[in-house]
Image 1: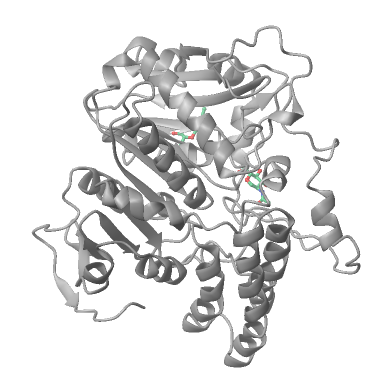
Image 2 (image 1 turned 135 degrees about the vertical axis):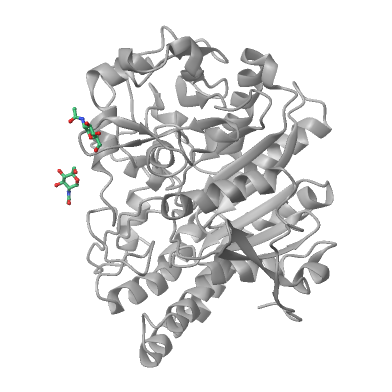
Length: 488
Ligand SMILES: *[C@@H]1O[C@H](CO)[C@@H](O)[C@H](O)[C@H]1NC(C)=O
Ligand SMILES: *[C@@H]1O[C@H](CO)[C@@H](O)[C@H](O)[C@H]1NC(C)=O
């Protein structure tokens, strides 16, 4: 691998699923963390490290002008990961604005390496940031319907940090161990919430994290490990879950949406056989072969983006402006303010970066892994899955997601494939189209890109509420669009 010489650095910094593409030699080099780009570290901070301990505080972002801290039920905390040398996982916990009996939800943003504050402040959190860095309530925040936790993970992401580089995670085993440990301790600290329904939500690269965590929680429950976590379902928004199928869908999606020509489509498709072969090898051999598969397959995506005129690959209706294709600088400015860090119990030595390159690079062997494999067992256990996909997203587009979910083998596969496509109607307007059977629902969201709750806040809150309440289907406004005899 180290011999491939020439490719110049094509660096696409993705918001959620953000890739850095380098020559193959550079990829393998970047396996080892570049000391100039460390994971968030506070050197030598082992002293206060008590494995398994949570330190949490209530806070208010509104200062004296807002409601009293006690009434808000807003918490920020650090959890000292027991399966680490000295890693601390940062999280926010917002009690529901409506009822403490609402479900408990954990939210995971993607990257890998992007802090969940991206969602918190721009998508489904309790507030949005204004340009003068003040906060306003988000009337469509998911804390209207749930008690919601936003976690910075894997270690080194957002305000999560370690004093030891060996704590960096490289795969879903590590990710799910840490999150499961965290949930156990979280519910010990908040015993009032253990009986509530529990859901796992995530976006983009969390198409890997979410199934991995759901399987870990289900396993813990079945083996009576620790507290029983009342897992009812898991949901993925514009996720990367089954890369072999999703990479194949790029040219088709791009052509269907006329962002490339037929000649360009043919040009890109030449790359497909090598990508398929490399992905298979990754599945059987793991390790370096997964880097190789990523490098080969990523060419497909790169070529498509190069053929376009600076398209925003999270939302093909837009141009890519700013280094994340959107301008999210406000959240970094806000979270780097000394008074904000202090309110949250974060050390002033930590610099908040929305997406960490080091965490991202450390997860590159994980990227091409197929996380669909654990899902059928969860469905058979009656744990429900919602896939919701903004239809204007290229990078984790609906077509690739629809294909893998239809190809997934489980007892309801045929019935799901034959399920009628119905309109998803919100306040009288068609907001998407839905297929569902038994525990599985697939919702294509209209007029939304990669970040569905940012683009369609009202629709996504309604989806959130209906799905958790078991009212996603059989809604009175539901209308059959067409019967679909085949998979895609
Ligand atoms: C900040 O912006 C918000 C909304 O854009 C406005 O309501 C508020 O008055 C502004 N605050 C200051 C201090 O300028
Ligand atoms: C992003 O937004 C910030 C704050 O509104 C602004 O100062 C900055 O110039 C913007 N950056 C870009 C690249 O547009």
